[in-house]
Length: 320
Image 1 (cartoon, rainbow, N blue to C red):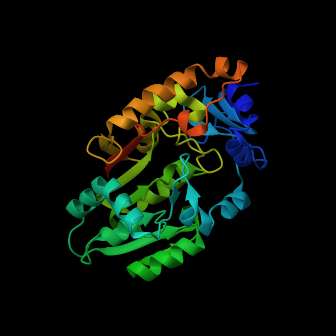
Image 2: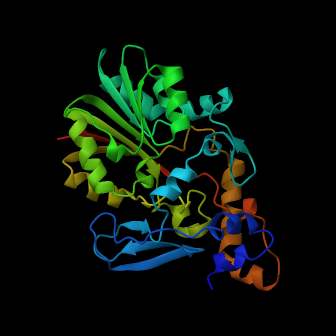
């Protein structure tokens, strides 16, 4: 039994157990980039297994949630009542929370405004509660796609944008319609990344800009903390994105990466207290097998990885 599964059996690990042990993932898949069935196990959380493809190196989850399970997961509560590992509730309707998120997305917003002329068209895929679209000037024609019916309706009301409800693979726009397409924390949720990205790229104008923000599962924290990396969520993060896997995917789709930006310095997360916490939590994570044996079990906030450089990456790319 892995250290993580042992931890889930403790009273401190009950939060993880409630998330991952009370559900059964509904489908098994081969590599979601190259289709190879040959993969090695990276780690497992209950019945969810994170794998690394032996052919292309893609990291993905299998078994994983199926369509019906994902639809049920993307409920209103996900946007208004979710809590982080420190117990802080995040409500995407609260103005302070929205302001913080806008600050986190300043690179995406700045790039969009730079590259979309007045009267230009922008598509926000996975627009959630409309934080990105609401931050753009009225001179830009705004569109969105959102799987959650509740979130799509909310964004439609507050932005007046053309929001389509449903999965991105079911969406349709004319070829070459958009100047900019933004995907903030969407790609890691995709069930079939090559099929979907190919479709999305066809909607971009020649030399149009694609902006992708995702967790980095090749970061320092991801490597050290593994299951305790705070951005691991196997119920919904199906494609464990890395710089290499995004380059592999986008190269095949005729999209050239211009820049990969790692937002951390200059953000509210870059604090000495969090850097000190990184050090102490890392020591506990490394020593966890021993701590479990002597029944000195850390609470989750004292074990999970905090925010740190490299955890998040924003990719700016152009259609060739």
